[in-house]
Image (cartoon, rainbow, N blue to C red):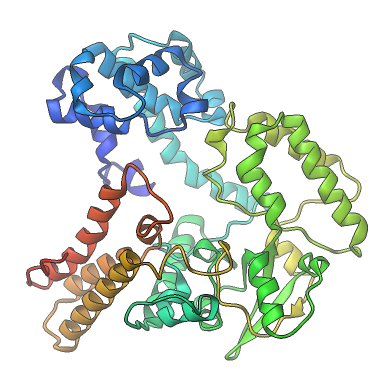
Length: 463
């Protein structure tokens, strides 16, 4: 956000959008057709006749270049505008009414109108971090953070941690890099402090992934608490031979490991997933009623001071709503504000008043299935881990020889840390596919190639 807002970061799709339609080369026009429909079709394309027409003109099955001749200059410009209009949610449209005017106009946009939409994107980027900072300063929200490049911390600390949750899995050659996991946590704190003026008290570990080994690392980086999924809690209690009572979920917990002491909250999965995956398909009042009824029921069976943690990927749900979630959020928050049994509370505010129940040794797992199957165990995923290990070993050897400048070292480590992020592994293996698989693969390989090039060595052919 900072790089794009300051004009220092490059974004390929942004470059394709800003270029005048009449100046687009044939390969760039093909890229437009391939990438500028990568948005939720049901809510962001089909409701708008012109955007829907452009999609049908390209073809819904594949954006191949054989349909390129159908697109004239005005079609390409309209596509540039509609893709960037499509990503503007209800708050942006309220703040900038001209967006609604362009949506109503629908077609035959000018280059000036296109540039204004892109300028609004930049204005939003330039303002959003300050808005979060102000909200946190007022106490209206509490901001948590996540490890800087979003790695799966337990696997970074020790890839064999996966054996505990997945004893059946074939794993790559063992890699143990707890210092990298700590670096990712410290980088997160440094960025959070710089941007928001204070350290983050709480951590959402990437994909809710935790293990006993990462608890001391969280504490060293200055975190007081973390959040993850109910499956991690329940499996951890079962592994200790404790009988699991679902009601135990609705309280603060305490984890003590290797001298580190952190508090923890575990998310209520069904209600969180209802917001993330189901509410968009339900009438807003009915969806809010569903959540209120269940929350009120939990409140009725819990002693005073119980807590329900709702947590979901903050960006994923809203494009599935016809209005990007405005009516649902309005209805839901109205019910929370008007309830006699329920009150909203920041995470830290709740934990300041509750010591937490000791849970013993925490389970090694994530918020997806309570394991790490998405990121390790398949041949493609294991090969990626092997290449991270080989590249890391190569970098460490160069550092030991003391042959690198400090600047070169830092840049090489930065590339490696970026390659350690979890989302590359999300698309490897059979779990998930996307039209952008090859882009993700090329970016992952490029980060590792960069390490070799920075050290003056040709990247291995397999990369």
